Length: 138
Image 1 (cartoon, rainbow, N blue to C red):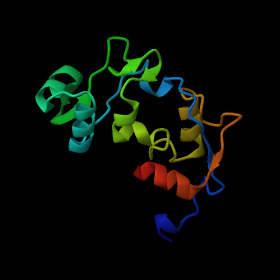
Image 2 (image 1 turned 90 degrees about the horizontal axis):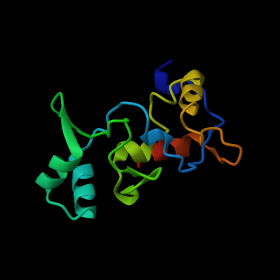
Image 3 (image 1 turned 180 degrees about the horizontal axis):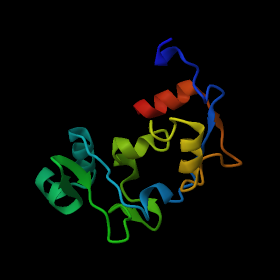
Image 4 (image 1 turned 180 degrees about the vertical axis):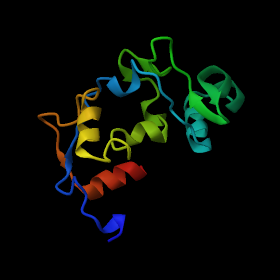
C-alpha cells in the first residue's frame, strides 16, 4: 500500500481558528522563505521597488531569501501582534498551521498547539482533510 493510500491520521479533520494572537510570527527563530511571487506581492503592497524591499525586509540564507526577524525573533512585519501586510503575507504564512511538519502526526499537531492557541480552540471549526489540503495550496 502506498503512502497516499494510507488513511490520514486526521481523516475526521482538524480543529483550527486563527485568533490573531501572533504566536506563529513571534518569539522563536526561524525562516519565512520567499518565492518571487511573495516578493512581488509584498513589494507592490508596500509600494517599494524590488531592490528596496529586499534591502529593507529580507536576508540571504544559503542562497535563499527569507524575511528578517527583529532581535526578539518577531517577524519584521508583526506590529501590535498583527501582521502589518496581512493581505500580502507570504505563502508560508498563509499556509500555517497546516504545514506538512505540523500535520505529520498527532504529536506534531499537539506540539504546534503549544505555540498556536487557535489549534484545537474551543470555538474552532473542524476542517476536513480536503479543506486542509486546499489551505496548504493557498
